[in-house]
Length: 360
Image (cartoon, rainbow, N blue to C red; front, side, top):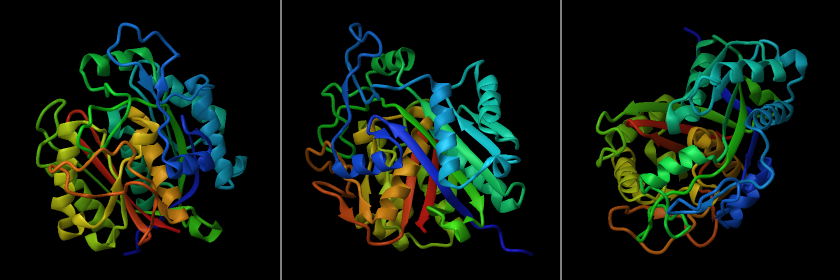
């Protein structure tokens, strides 16, 4: 039996309140300055909270997605001929518009292969990445573009505010004592996944992935983090790596009390003794929670940081929480000790994903 195809990230692009392009994301997360500010895109007067990480010059989502896909394809060296037959997997917020948006984006960017849309809340983008990798490993396709986008808008903002999930102090403080919640942020990203792209100089390798459900509660995480632990274990097994090889975790951590504690428990279960010494941070503390796009934005940031050899800080830190006994990156970026990292995401309904990448 032939060995499964290696999956490489050959092109990446992202836009967030940290700026436009991969370089802006890397500079922003290494600077460690949160991008939250008062919302001026819509009226927040009726809301408890008025902050988000919004890009001042953000355009229409369809235009932003097309720009991201084109940029990622250019980064991967994909001309019109090589875009033909390439699959498109798109992660966005659900609605009747999604099929038309997906078709229009594929047509606009010249991606004529199979097209899929993912609307599974905050694991939409990471699920799309896992599916793209599986398609490549099975030999169903040789190349796929995963794109994702969310721009802060009034409806979701109102729902999170009404649910008292937004941080009342204007800061996201993952794993920290005194954290008060999450804040939303713009995120539009695209990556090119290919089989055998290493010969052209891949950005990173997607070595493993895992998905698992909790079936615990529609909104609350399972306290022991068992679903997320199974996802991490599956990613390690697929990559053929021990827990000790992981040199960084870009955590899902949203800055909410129960969710962060559940994730810390999951890491202790999945990584064992290594959990106490693996550097962990959540870049949501800098660019906010991009909902359906969060998994892809955070994957891009993780890959760039790993390639650069520096790990982003966990902004907003006030002090340790006994429920989150982790090695949280604080104060300044830390040198990467290994070339392997995990990017974790979780969603309402108990969905959990883990993506494991290795520096090229």
